[in-house]
Amino acid sequence: MSPPAREERQAHIRTQRLAQLGTLLAGFAHEVRNPLSTIGLNLQLVLEDFREPETTRDKRTQKRLATVESEVRRLQKILEEFLSFARTPEPKQVPVPLNERLQAVVEFHEPELRDAGLSLRYYPGHDVGTVPADWDHLQAAIVNLLRNAKEATPRGGLVMVSTVREGDAVLIRVTDSGAGIPPELQPRVFEPYFSTKKSGTGLGLPTVRRVAEEHGGALLLQSEVGKGTQFTLRLPAPRSDADEPGT
Image (tube, rainbow, N blue to C red; front, side, top):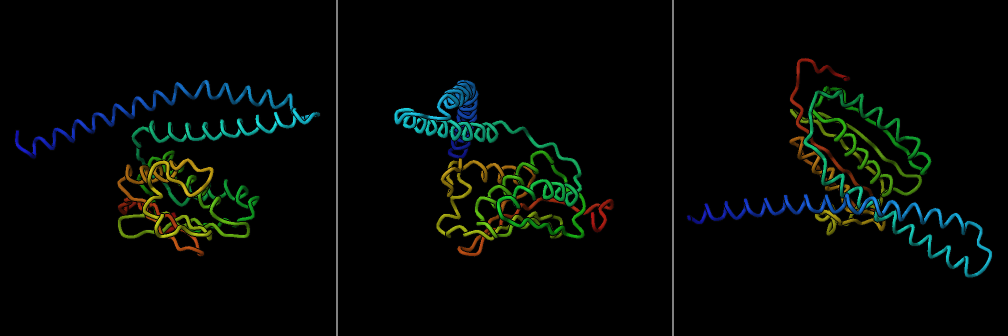
């Protein structure tokens, strides 16, 4: 067997093993999810019994149970994000009126950011038109970026969503005025399970990047410490005769 053929065969074997491992991990996560949910539910019920602790022992027990319940919730969040990362089906792309759909997303999330003391602004590009996309996947990716921006931005800050056309591509930008990401950490933010947040799972940005790549696009990062961060979803969007300025 020639060296190129041997390398190709080894690469194929590695791919098969990774696929099998992914299937096994997804199955394991499914098996763990139900008992973990049962544990969380029962912890909540027990905490109800200690809602008004009377003795020092009751107070100590309540505190320990609350800590365990918090960790169970954290595990549930990790599990759900892993399952979302592992099981997302192939996107089914159809023409999407991007500016209109994004307007609805921004309007839906604006009260949440306002309650957090943040301003959310939307700047739609005038000639964006329609974009071939699986809206369910794309919307989930944008919401993920909005959630990251919210968590990265202190009260009084600003989060912006904008779209712009660049030739046969459309850019969706989510920009925050948070602390920014240090240059040495920026190459790692797309690694699974790496997070700069204490409560982060580290699967959000890898999922967003995968959505971008499944659409034939890319996820780009620009960040400056002390000024903020901008994530850009770059999506292929050839111009169509049906696209009109302002749509």
